[in-house]
Image 1 (cartoon, rainbow, N blue to C red):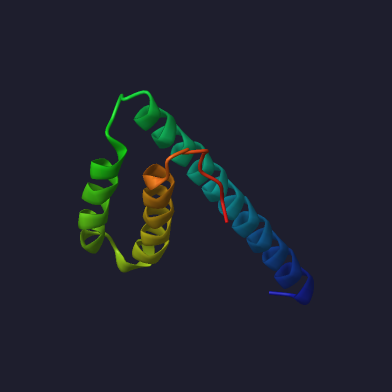
Image 2: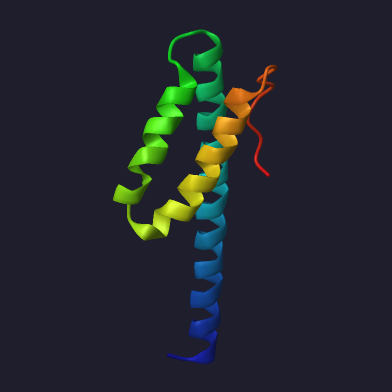
Length: 90
């Protein structure tokens, strides 16, 4: 394992990390706004759905719980607000 191979490997890992982070953010943005729109159109009742997901959080692997909890809290806040302007990443 040469220094050049290590550098290539590290660059590849950085690219994969960036890609995964970017995709996760894009999916959170799209799914959050989809849920808000479905709630606005009375296709689903968003707050009870979010509350069910929050209740299921302890059943999920610990590595997902913190991020899922933060996303659900933001969705809960977005659905609770009168204008429901949309879901934005923070």
